[in-house]
Image (cartoon, rainbow, N blue to C red; front, side, top):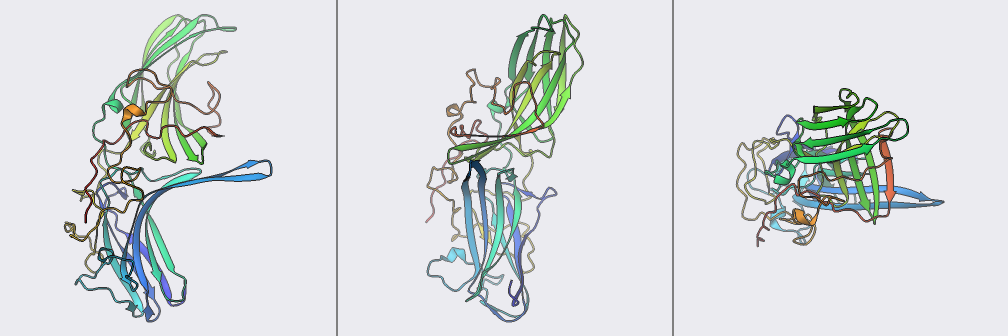
Length: 428
C-alpha cells in the first residue's frame, strides 16, 4: 500500500444471526477508501465471485507432481470509476445517490462507495474448506492508478444453498441385512436387519436407526454406530480421499441365543458442512456405519449413505423473485434498502463461466438422477447403497486416512438435491 492510499477495504452487512447468504439474497456493503492527498484514479471496482479449487502434490521418487483444478461459478465486476470505457458497458458503471458518476479524483480523507448485489436463484455448492480443496465466495475491490501497483482487498462471505423441495429419493427409508457365521473362538451365527427412516437429514436433526439383532452365537455382542465424513478431491484424472470419524456410539449388550429390537437416535451435529454433490472437482459425503462388536471375530457391518441438507430457513429478509444477478447503488452511508428497487432495464443476467447447458451455466442442475445411481448399488431406489470406505474392513483408524488413485472421478451428482429448472431466456 502506497503512502497516498492509506487503506482500502470492502465490507458487507450481515442479514441474519448466522451471517450466511443463500440463493436470492441481497448482499449489501461498502468499499472504503482512505487517501492522504488528492488522488487520481484510473478505475475503482467491486467484484463478486464464487469458485472451487483443489490442489495437492504427490512424490514419485525424486519427482514431485502437482495436481490442481478449478471450477468457476460466476464472476461479476462493477465500476465506481472507469476512465477507459472502450471495452466496458453502461451496466457495469455505478453511480452515486443522485445518479451522477463518481469523480475520478478524490480529496484527502475517507470515501465510502456503497453497493448491493443480488445472488441468483441457482443452487451453487456451499462454502467449504478441506485439506486440499475449498469452495469460496468473495467480494473484492480493486483500485488502479497510473504508474502504480493496483491496491486490492477482499472479504469472504458464507454461502449456503437454499432449502430444497421435497425429494422422494432422499425421504425414502433405507434397509440393510447382514448375516455372519462365527469361526475359531466363537461358534454359532449372528444377523442384523437395519432400517433408517430416510437418507436426507437437516442439520441438528436426529438420525433414527431401527435394528433387529439375532444373536445365535456363544458370546454376548454389542451393536455400535458410527457417522463419518468423506471428502473426495479430483484433478487430472487423480483422486484424493480424506475420511474422518465424527462420532461413535454403542448400544446395550445382547446376550447369546437371544433376539433384540434396538432403536437408536443419533444427533446430527449442527456444525457439520452440508453434503456437496454438485461440484465436479470435490465432494462432501457422509456415511452411517452400523456394526456388531463380536469378540474374537471380524465385525459384520452395514453402511448407509447420509445426505446432510441445509436448514429449512436460511435466507434473509429479502428473496429474489427472478434468477438475474443485479447490483444497485445504496444511499450514502451504506444503509440497506428495506425493499430493494426492481431490476433496472439495463441490468444483465449472471455472467456465468461456461456455455449454456454446461455445469455452472444458467438453469443447469445436473443430469436426471436415473443416470447417476449410487455406486455399486443394484437394488431399487431408497435402499442401502454400500459406499467405498478408506481403511480395512472393521477398522476405524486414527480417524483420518489419505488415499490417492488414478481411477476416474465417480459420478459427482449421486442424488439430485435440486430440481431441474428451465433455462432463462437471454436478454438483449
